[in-house]
Length: 127
Image 1 (cartoon, rainbow, N blue to C red):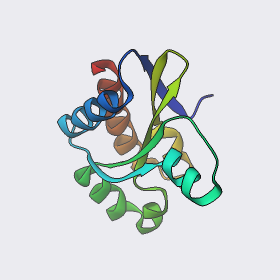
Image 2 (image 1 turned 120 degrees about the vertical axis):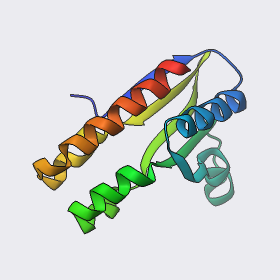
Image 3 (image 1 turned 30 degrees about the horizontal axis):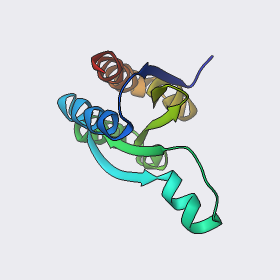
């Protein structure tokens, strides 16, 4: 079973990143962090790597509901969405929040995971 949901799109990498951020915002997610993996690996290791960005996405309402249920849930927040070059496509891959929440083993979190997954699926479909 996969732990991500993804789509492959044609387009310029930076444009896809911007479109992804906009689509996340349309679904109520803010991007709390934006990690440029390529730049980081170049600076820290002097290694070349494909264009690869990690977007830390958080829906405040869903995060609040989850944290009200389990304070330690913050250890798996925010939900990551990655955007990377892959041959002639750009891949956008989002963590499966339902799989992520399985580690908490609390059925009260199931509706939150379902809601987050539906939102991520709409983001991916919009790209």
